[in-house]
Length: 377
Image 1 (cartoon, rainbow, N blue to C red):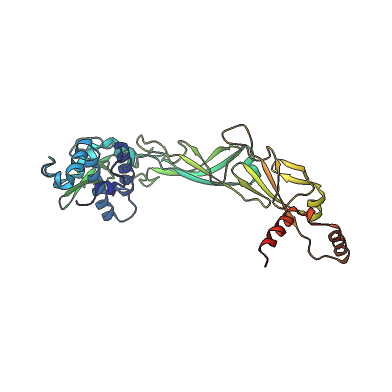
Image 2: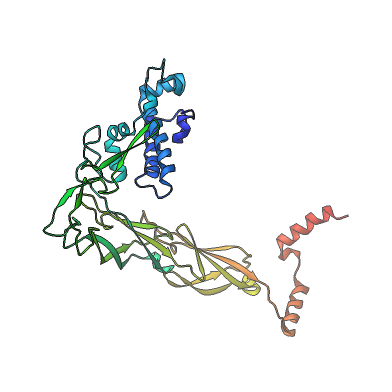
């Protein structure tokens, strides 16, 4: 093995032992052949490399020797003789608690492949998407959802065998629950494909669930959606996912909130943004306008001389803050609209205005004209 062991685990050479362990756990969960969804052969080779890297770097003593002498040095003067005959089963037995946590079953038992005992199967998580209107996100609400959840079969009680029958020793693994596969110098112990790690197979499958142990059932669950929830946020209901088996914990239920877009409003964090078109006369002379908010109608005042892009602030008219008692604000942005399709009377009126107005009425225009004169030739 010539590649950099730190690179194999995706960590720097200054990584702490906890960082090395966390990196190994992540990669092991991704490439373990028993659960990898892609090419099993590629996953097995990858898993061997990351397991070997962790066995060296995961122990401060061997890590120091590797840092001093390199991988080849571990075989000789580094004092790690015989490492070329690396056995994957050492990894499994040496870190049984870690693998139990990663893959949801008990890795206990003897060091050299003794039967692992009853396999705990942790329940899978469930994702449920729900949609609410923009305004509804501002208020606490309760919603009853219906999910399909796998639960232990009522007939066999999650055993998967026909009532009145028993289980027999698996002939593939001899009741060990695991089989050893050897490739070159490497020896790897994996879960038995016939009994799936249990060491026994049913004499007859349950007629109700077909040996699957589970039955899918519809369940109604009441969910409380808190005020101020954002689009894409999720709620976690522990233990409401698919059931586990043989003492395995149930999965969790994740409610993903999708907030429908609004025709008038946008959201920035806890603030509501509204773009309000106003006429040039409203902007110049001022006006009072009734507008909608997420809490009902509100009358606002457009100050005389309002410029395009100016903001009228409505305090506390935004969304409630999830982790506090206050609320965001509402920002009403004035968009001054120039009239189109002018009739003769309106044209004459505007011409009259033009005759009496001056640069002093338009400070920005006056400033721009002054600056432009400096560059005109």
